[in-house]
Image (cartoon, rainbow, N blue to C red):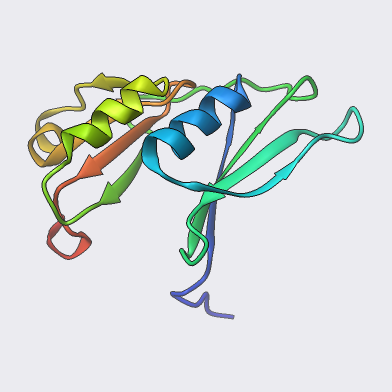
Length: 135
C-alpha cells in the first residue's frame, strides 16, 4: 500500500488547559472547532479538534483530569504555516492577546517569519515564504 499524498494529517498534542489552547488557535489564529468531546470515563480524555473545514490537516488537543502526560515541547517542535505573504502584525498581536508569547526561533525562522508560543509552550511559526520556495 502506498500512502496517498492527499491523506489527511492529524497532529495530536496534550494540553494543560484546553480552553486556553482553543482560545489561542481559534480567536488568535482563526481556526475553527471541528469537533469536541468530553471524556465519558476515567480512561478517556477531553478533546477538541481545530482546523479549517476543507483543509487536509487538523490539530487535535487532548486534556482533562484523565490525561497522564503533560505537554513537553522543545524549541524545535514547530507547527509552520507557509503564508506566502508578509506576516500581518495584527495577527501576531491577536495571538498574543489570546495567550501567545512571541519568541525568537533562530536565524532562519526569524528571517522568514514570526514564532509564537501557544499556552502549552508549543511553537507556531508563521512563515512569509511559500512551501515551494522554502528550503
